[in-house]
Amino acid sequence: MKAGIVGLPNVGKSTLFNCLSNAKAQSANFPFCTIEPNIGVVNVPDPRINKLEELVKPERVQMATVDIVDIAGLVKGASKGEGLGNQFLGNIRECNAIIHVLRCFDNDNIVHVDGNVNPIRDKETIDIELQLKDLETIEKRLEKVKRAAKTGNKEAQTEEALLNRIREALLQAKSARTIVPQSNDEEVLMEGFQLITAKPVLYVCNVDESSAVNGNKYVDQVRELVKDEDAEVIILSVGAEADITELESYEERQVFLEDMGLTEPGASVLIRAAYKLLKQQTYFTAGVKEVRAWTIPIGATAPQAAGVIHTDFEKGFIRAEVISYEDYVQYGSESKAKEAGKFKVEGKEYIVKDGDVMHFRFNV
Picture 1 (cartoon, rainbow, N blue to C red):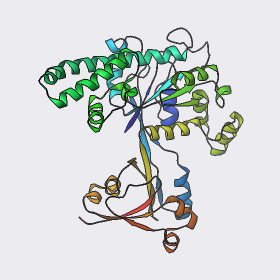
Picture 2: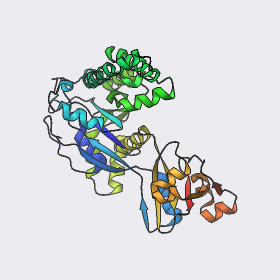
Picture 3: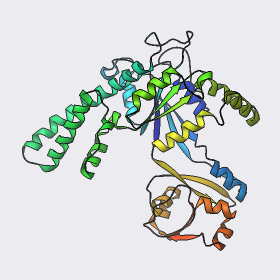
Picture 4: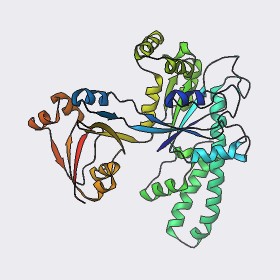
């Protein structure tokens, strides 16, 4: 599962990517600096794993991760191939969610591709290009399905009706994610269309350091604009975050954050939000060899969770032994949680909860 960072050139995408991944994607004050998409495998900050490490004292710790993709800046006309349009659209299509970075700071030393700072216009530029590309996809699909619908084919008629609803939304400059599938069939169809504007989105307002806590007029404009989109807005001072990652010690970083009025780096907030945006959750395995966070989709069953460790665990699944994270921490160990009756044995139908500490029994 991958989240792609998108935005106009020079809004801080590559600098943000560097903060998140500690990879050193080239960042410079000109458009199209990031040409090949950089992919960073980023640890998901989770205080729960630190607590489990403290209790279990394992030989090693493995955190959950999320893939972040830094994609080249998009410009007007991208849907027709302008700039690196086709490449950009291909890269974003391969991502499961979008982190849309908007420039919300004034700085005469950093060139804006459209001449002045206006996050509303910038968002609309990106949205329109993505909507135009989706419109092209929808119209091609409609051409094919109309013929089958005319013959009375029920599946084709369902598809045609959904395509027309999406087309109407796109023509009104609304993204495909505003269309709610009315049935399971529509849900499956929607997923199959692989529309760019159907992907879940998170907006990152890149602000100056003094606006990192409360935002500014630009952030207020963005919040007002996206209030009906069911999308989260995160405030981040990307420049300050870059400075924080350069500091050697944890203590130095904490002092810097306190001076800014923050309790943790904004990058940590963003990574957790991206993880949630991708509809992922975490369960843990905890033993003296290793404490590990495993990533599974929200709603995964116990056998599916076991399969993330190894496919044999899913094939030969017998049962899952489960202690909730809260119970594990309250009683301080697996054995004490068992003594307190907080140890559950679950079968194939069990839906894993975020934070479950699990062991699997299987037979191959």
